Image (cartoon, rainbow, N blue to C red; front, side):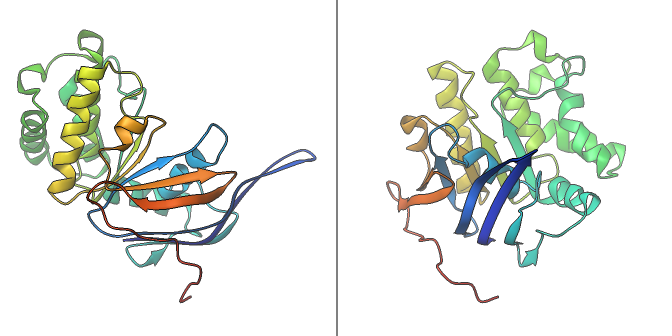
Length: 238
């Protein structure tokens, strides 16, 4: 589903040059659940931005379902994000003055889906995340765990094959965090490919594979629990 080949990301500010990623090789198969870990400044957030088509690499190839997206335009990347990737953030990133229903509906509006289909899908997603009775409530009227459930439902709005989660339990108490991770586990069992950045080893334990980033490179890539090992590829068929 995903293959990164010799990915470098270099930031330049005046005379300062910072190499955030240093030749990353990585493969992700459909249906994997991967935890991405590493200390602050290791490059894991840069990696997630590239995986999510929020940024482009300085060098290298990024194959997403067989298509090299590294050199695509902003509009082309936006279309890919809307159709193929769902995002879940630590801070939820919900529209505070919109209801749960409206927040979940938003990606479908951008995709041009008709009103009736939008309503049916939002109602299904609200039930899926256990918030059927909260459709007309705004984020300010919800707990952190409920807000993150709305964010997950929004990420699923256009039924993307990939979910990217950046510290999804970082703002939650342990009980709410477990509920969110149980939901991710269910989604993964249903076939969603999930890549999750976390600093919490307990949260990482839910994943089937753990990738650790250090100084812009993959330091370890190992099976986690009942997962299967997938090593970074040293060579590319390209």
